[in-house]
Amino acid sequence: MTTSSLTSSSPSGSRTSLERSPLYPLYRVIGYMALIIAAAAVMLPFAWMIISSLKMNNQVFTVPVQWIPDPVQWSNYIEIWQKSDMFLWTRNTLFLSVVITFLQCLTGSFAAYGFSKMRFPGRDTLFLMYVATIAVPWQAYMVPQFQIFTEIGLNNTLWAMIALQAFGAFGVFLMRQYFESIPPELSEAARVDGLNEYGIYRRIMLPLAIPGIASLALLTFVNTWNDFLGPLIYLRDRDIWTIQIGLNSFIDQYNAEHALIMTGSVLSVLPIALIFGFAQRYFVEGVATTGLKG
Image (cartoon, rainbow, N blue to C red; front, top):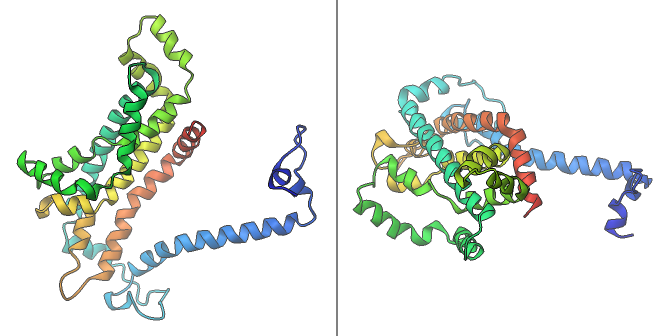
């Protein structure tokens, strides 16, 4: 029995061959158990992080793992604000994440509209060359890029991070795939009515592409919020550090405040979790729709 025969359904919508099998309940149980085990494996590090944030520093790496903190150190969540510049680091990280996300959505969707709905010589070749840059690792051109930013005076400023990440080939690729799912008759009708390309992009394409933009915004926001290497290279002054660099300062040559690192990690994950919770529907819809034309 082939896989297609197992999963195919009749035109009337009756049960599939797999569903009619007497072993189908067993397959369902095995499938659910596999999903539960996989979910537990994914969530285990997060659970350990949250539990460790409520321990004393010398209890974090005890063997065997102490899953119930004793005593519960709620004071870690107060101490981290008192002993560090957590507010300043959060503000810098939020500023970079919001500005970079806005610019990536703007530039990515604008370029994607040109590659998807406009006709000009060499369009497909130029798009392939641009998307191919995704395969080039940042480490390959990190040094000359750093020298250029030093020459133009952007090194050790937040503007360096914004200039680095305001444009992204992945965003252009993602949004182009979404625009491809929008019928071309809409833009053609708008041109016939006298609307120029900027008007078509702003008044027709952007409102229809909200799920795709939401997906790009969420991915960009998370990547920027969690970025460590970029800020480590370009942000040296303490007053422009991000959360990831600030947490690294809890580790010195001879000691590390692991409990506070876990507390800071929990605090840094909270905004991402909240944003994903509110935008989950748009994120799933955007990814599913862009996949149709992939």
